[in-house]
Length: 156
Image 1: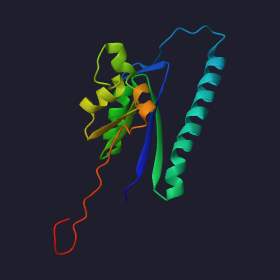
Image 2: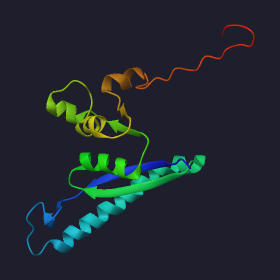
Image 3: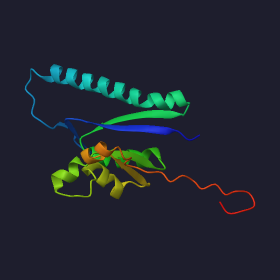
């Protein structure tokens, strides 16, 4: 019954509060609600399209999957909350390290991946994007050790 869950948290311009409901994050003039809604609808359609593109290899390989898209102002916290709510057993996520550059950190973890490593209730594997220097020599960012096969009747 295992399945891959493609989890995406879309940013929203609305803050949700426990007792006070949604509050606009940025002030809007009376003439913009329709255009703001159109922009959000277009972004939602784009997000759904990208998620479907990411799911194509899973579909072609016959691997069961689910696409789960939510919206929140704090993407880092929402990711961890959804991981817990969905009962996921592991998280695999990418990191381009942009948050690390902004913070002056050389650890190469971005702010979202760093947050998830420290706050998710399950193991988190972070796969970083290759640096420019990595692309030039075509070395893999992640290496996988091949399993050693033991020969019958002897050491392998």
